Image (cartoon, rainbow, N blue to C red; front, side, top):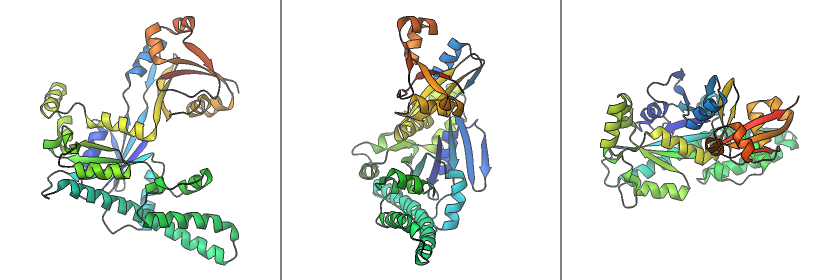
Length: 358
């Protein structure tokens, strides 16, 4: 899973990146962007590895990309092309908003206005990509290449939707249209998560509650059907520098139940509709993320293409059933180890033993 962070200048986006990446995580610099790959902790993986006696444990990962700040009114094709190599395969984007040190009499309105400005910048970036392609298609059509008419019509509809203030993720598309559009790596076609970067006084999360200072932002997010997560990036970045007991004490003092990364990952999983399944043997136990509703055959393909190509069936055990039984043999004895075909919908916490022949 890959998530890109966007924000206007002074939004605290890079501080949010540090919190999400964790202070001990390595990150690489790619031009104006930073990239951090973070392993997702999952106690189920450790449990399964212990049961199977696995020598290696491989966690699922999430990649965070901290992009250069977006400057209002400077969207162009060059900027869009610079983002594509890093974010073309991103699963979602987080929009970081400055919600701290706001002197405005109506801070919620100020934050909501910043959200609208950020969405406009993303839309302008997409329009810059579409307009260049539309110019080419229009020229091809005038030269008699009628086969481009369908793509031209689609992109004109997308451009009109963006100009009217819409997000491409909300535009109704056929499966073929969606596949074609994804080749352009357009920003507003991706799922979006709003991050309200609040100050220390609001670190406990109350700022977005009904009747509180940032209710206008919460209301705007509801209008746009965008999930929103609030945390104090600068404060949590400072707490991350402390040791375990000191961390716990400071978190308690500020009413922070957990670090933002845990809540962010849950929000991202919900936004993308992801579940985790596990595979294990004596060599390795591994966690995998997959879209909810994916089949056993699709899960097999995620592990290895040969498994999908030669899929026979999958032995499936729910992690909680294994925990209660204590062993694979006991699960089989109880009937909680099941043989499923390729159409079986994989559930969160399933352990798959895939049988295949190539």
